Length: 203
Image (cartoon, rainbow, N blue to C red):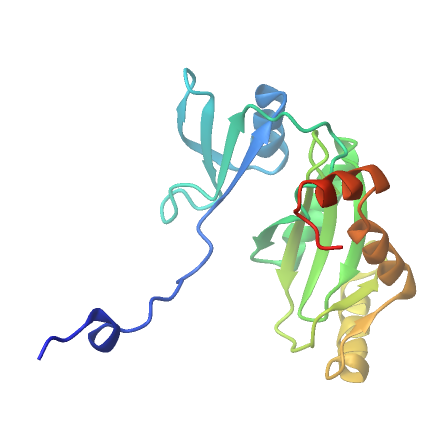
């Protein structure tokens, strides 16, 4: 009797997301942003190929972000929904918020997800990113509640906990976020028409 791999091997599973790669218009500007503002470490690079490897944990993860040249999509085109970086402490998120203000980084939104507090921002080429801290609370997602991060930290965390007590089981989204999400998901008429013509979008 022949045993097949289907019967003898466990189903493959992903351990974790390893890294994300972004193509860039201006590689040197992007590299400066992710090293100087975000504080990532360059672990390897090949200038001839135009590839740079960066990590927040170089001792345990060779690279979590890869930057490469060759982007041919204009800035403003909807490609990346978000790239998120986890912080170990709430104080780190507060510190990044101050740093972003000092470097005139364009902010998107500052929110509680119930299970996390995040500051969303844009890199120099318009890629939407987030730094966040896990609160340890349990909240059904999506959970998006705008917060004033300049509130006293203890008062802010008390408010987040109270909100999770009220909405954690059901999730929570503000109308402004729902409207934004619907708008972001709507393809421009020209793009939608081109996609349909190419057979990429069903009628």
